[in-house]
Length: 360
Image 1: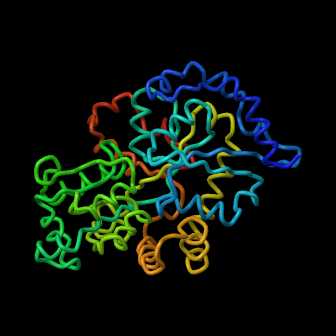
Image 2: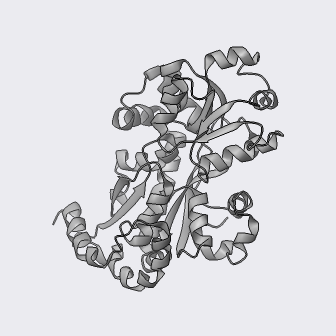
Image 3: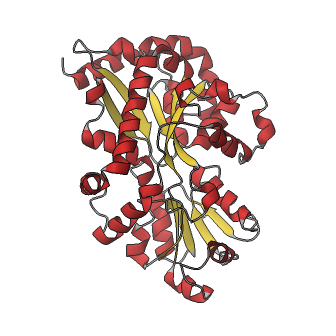
């Protein structure tokens, strides 16, 4: 049987035991189902040809999840006897995590804050590594730049101070990129609740449209999306995470590999293979960018203006880790910036929630 047909047949067998609810707290409360769900582990669905299917939920295609896109475009999973299917769950990491908890997906590619928030609420999740660093880019409307009276190549401190009083569209409250933006504003003496007007929007396209319509003075979101605003409204890159404009947050991971703990424990061979695939993808993003750029653009970003693509692709080069790890420093950053505070993690230990091979 063809690996993909085998996967879907197996998925149908397992479907009867999967929790159907999408409600966050119901998904967290479904811990009692994990022993039943573990019977659907991917290694128990391996085909006669020795190919193991892995279903992964992720957000829409952006430069943030380029590591996974490289894997798919290059068929790197096949070399490790995996048949990985990427399923886009929308812009919310929470949806991807819910899919893992309910058994609708084996793994999720999600923002660390969403994963850790679920863990502190009792969700049985394990972080298997990270595959993207800070990919957030902020662009400002050209008329606003003229009004500010400074240029986009001014010192970072001046550019950040110039944001005072502006309306900034960004990702929703509690999301990876909004939390990151709040941290960066604070580093330069701005209170994100007082000194700027921050508007969280779920739909990334609405951010681009809102900037063009004058609803926002600036927007900050993932590279690969925000560049469209350069075309639509002549927006100017103001702060770039992948370019390393703010050194303290340049290497902060924004995309983690997350699995349900019981599934991870039952499928360590599959987990290790997938982490190896991600390591190969990360290496390709570093060493083979000239070849990969045209491939990814044609496959996932065909409508993006070539000039904007070239700029974004060049800037994103520094936005990926060397290996799919999740260091303690990364864990500490997101815990310390959790809106609920560090105390909410009194019962959570880094060693317990991070896959052994991903600890660094």
